[in-house]
Length: 111
Image 1 (cartoon, rainbow, N blue to C red):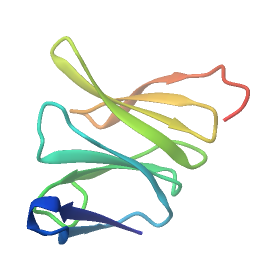
Image 2 (cartoon, rainbow, N blue to C red):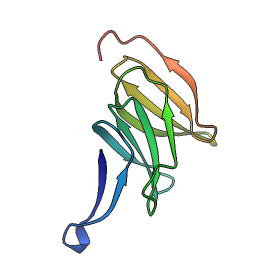
Image 3 (cartoon, rainbow, N blue to C red):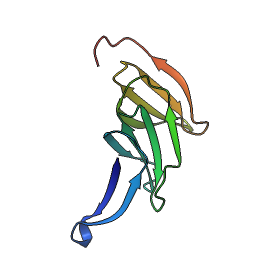
């Protein structure tokens, strides 16, 4: 699946294409601390982090059992995190620097 970057100042020209997910992309979110990076949530069960100017993902977070529907950045104190929610009814908190899941939150009974 593709993510396309459109420039509205250039008459909605597609300026970049990002390729790497193998199923639908459900959400993208721009890093509030770095407007040149963004994360994407996909039904391929992964979160990918991308850099503008590069066609492939910087890294992939793989840990959900089912498709990922949402992702967001959380900058708590001096350590950045990504938070993802998926159809496996889990919320995962990822350390952005080590690229590892540091906490899994359970408790939802429906996705």
